[in-house]
Image (cartoon, rainbow, N blue to C red; front, side):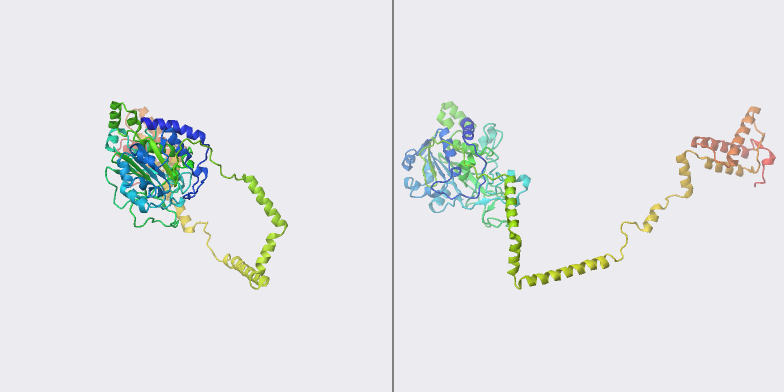
Length: 547
């Protein structure tokens, strides 16, 4: 499915879109077939695609009977074409015998298949169409995700979701899924699947069995599991009670496969082939339709089929041998596919916002000039029991009650005692200002921050002299009487003692950095040790009776 489908889509897609300058659809539910439907509900684009793909139209059932092995029977809409009055009259053995001879069948309808039509579908593909109209309520989907579930923001247009395996890629995948229609692959490029195939008021497929026969008919696509019957209440969360789906994640929409020498494709909606669903550029309905027609024609599906066609040098085998189509659309056979497309009729134009606002303002002004609002209000009041007297009494009662409520609020409710919520409690404020350390530690930290530790040095120097028995009452510093070493060393010791004496006796604070304090502490320790060992001796006048 590579050569012919690629050529068909590349040729037909620009042609159809160039002819149709259309806007996206807004479906309003299933359309009732009439003799002359509007242009956007017709199938001109579908027939034009058949013409571009060089399909030959068949004019009647007898011609389909004569060319059963190389023909495609396409039934869109009303399934009455499968009755004994039409199809079964020429094929008494049913659809299965027609397909077994080599023919292909495309049945797309959102109407209920019952009686003969339902029996024929069940025998051929194992499914029937329920006829329910499925919609997706906006409330069930997040606004940002709606574009992945519905087309053009219309709850009547859910997007088709391909089932796993229906768009397999690669040689091995094609070999494994041989016989399964590959309808959701884009040409070109082949690595992007068709993700926006839009329906229009679709129905669903059901089967009596748990699943379809293996190797014959395959489930191809489903609808989102949020789909519900249009007749169900918008708040109802459980739909289709007691019925089974082939796919547990959503209603079954499409099945297809090979039966004998022929091919079968069944869809639960025919409206995806109408003009307003194929012509817009915002969806993938046109390439999906081309893929369906190419597969029904009988084009190659697997690399093995391509190899056989290349060896036989058969163009018919490569592109497909079924080149004749009997197109049945709502009780009508179309013998001609060469139609000219035209732009779809535009929806009625809506005036601009400014014009609408101006018209509303003009109407309101006329009503006010004629005093229409007051007269309507008085007429409504007069029509009540007791008329205006009752309205006046009710108004007096209400005003009195409102005045009492206001006075009670003003003088009773607001005057009550209430603690000030914005101000903190006294206990909490006191607790926040309690110091975490003692005053001495606070003072020491403050001195360190200032870089002046004179008070600490003053206190330590006094303690050092007092511990060694030197009185701090004299004005002059003590003199060293005896000390080891030379006169120069005794002079240095006297200077050190005098410096420490001034630190201990000083009353006015003097700058003292922490580094200088370390030197003074070391000198105090050395002096204290020398006095204790008797290495040095101070004059007796400075001695006290310590000890």
